[in-house]
Amino acid sequence: MTMETRNYMGKLCDLLFKKIEEAEQVEQQTDHLLESHETVQMTEAMQDNLLMQMISKSGTHMEYSLLSACVCLLLGCCIQDNNEYRQSLSNILPDHSFKPLIEQLKKLRDFAHLA
Image (tube, rainbow, N blue to C red; front, top):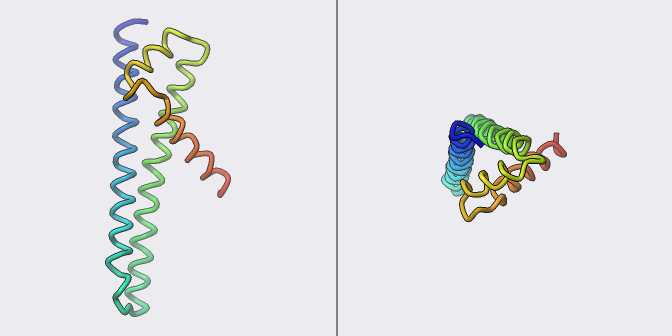
């Protein structure tokens, strides 16, 4: 494997974990938004506004999750039937584990079943 290929895999992993982190942040923001409105008596206009905010946040979350899953698929294609690439990717991943990639792909699968 060339150094350039390793660099590309590293950049893909950086993108993957950035999108996972961004999705988690949006999820936390959404939870906070809901919690902040739990005890408030809301008018219909306030409910509509909250609903629009929630839809916007969920779209952003899905965008980040979908991008991370696509990166996982791309990495999976790169390492398929190639032990050298598989080992190199494993060395880049935290704890040398493919678990974060598998989790993202499971989320994609679960979303696909809903859609």
